[in-house]
Length: 233
Length: 229
Image (cartoon, rainbow over all chains, first blue to last red; front, side):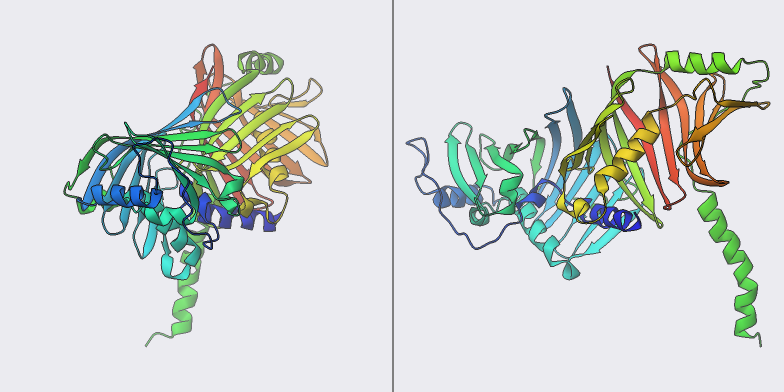
C-alpha cells in the first residue's frame, strides 16, 4: 500500500508537468516519410510544406494567446472546458496559465519546469538537466507552440487535409508508444498561416480534445509577471 | 559561550510544537460546520431526511488535491455515481487536461479502463482509488441497527463494519452527515469530513470533502466545481 502511494506521488510529479504532447515520446529512429497530400494545390512533399509554415510563422519573437480546451470524454455526456492563456517567448519559453476550472500555471524554459496551482498553493520546480525524459517532452511541446513543425516528422506521418484554412493531420507512427493512445492530431492554421487556430487530439479511447486559440497577439511585450507561476490574477 | 548542544536542546521543544501544529493544524479550505443544538432532534428522522435530500445518482466535476509526506498534487476529477447500484465511473486529469486514469466500479468489482503506465507499475492503484471513492460517496447513512449517541451539537451513530467500527456524525443546521470515521480497535483508520452542503435541483451536495487516511498517511481534498444534472 505504501509503495502504491509512493508511486502515485512520483507519478503526479511526472504527470503534473505533462500536457498532451507527453504522450508523443517515441523512438526517434523513424525519419521523414510524409504521406502524399490529398489536394492538388498542396505541395506533394510535406517537409516542404512544413518548412513553408515554419517560415511563415517565424516573424515573431513573442506571442500571447487565449485558449479554450474542450475535452470530450467518451464515457460522459458533457464536455470539460478548460480556459486559459499561453505566453510564448522564443527561443524556448512557454508559460501556460489555466484560469478555469482551477487556476494553474506552468512555466517551461530550456532549463526548468516550474508549476503552481491554487488548490495546493505550492510552487514546484523541476530542473531539466537531471531529467532527460522531460527534455524530450519539452522539445516536442515547444515544437508545437513555437512552430518547429519539421522536427515532428520524426514521430508522425503527416498529410494535408484542407487548404482553406490549412489543415494538417499528424498520425503517430506505428512503432511509437503514442500510437497506443493517440489516433491522430489535426492542426488547423489561421488564414494568414502565421500560427495555430485549432489543434484536435483524437484518442484511441474515443476521447477527443480540441484546443482553440483566440485573441492571438504577435510580438506583444511579455511582462515578467506573465512568466510568473504564483500569485497571478 | 553557549554550548551548541544545549542550544539545540532548548530549540527542540519549540521545533516539535511547530511540527505538530503544522501536521495537526492543516488548513481546511472550507467553512467549518456551524453547530446548532441537536438535543431535540429525532436521530432516525435526521438520517431519513439526509437520505431523502441526497442524490441517488449524480455526475459532478471536482478538483482534487492529493497530499502525502508534505507533497501536494492536484487534478481535475469527473465522476458519475449511482448510489443505489453502488456503481461509479471516474476520470481524473491533470490541470492541463491530460487524462491520468479512468476507472469504473460496481458491486462486482473495479475495472481499470485507462491508467497511465507510471500509475500502474506497482501496487494496486485501481483498488486503492476505487476504495476511496466508495468510502466517500457510498454508504453515507447508518443502518437502523446502529447504536445512537446524542450529544448537544451532534448525533453519533456507530455500528460494526468489517474488522472495525463505522461512525457517522450528523450535525449543523441541516442535520447533515459531517463526518464518517472508521476505527479498528480504538485507532482511527480513516476519516472523511463533509463541508458546506449546497442544494442543487432539490438535492444536497457537499462543496468540500476531506478524506484522511491515517493508516497510510495521506489525504484527499475534494472541491466540488460543477454538478451535471
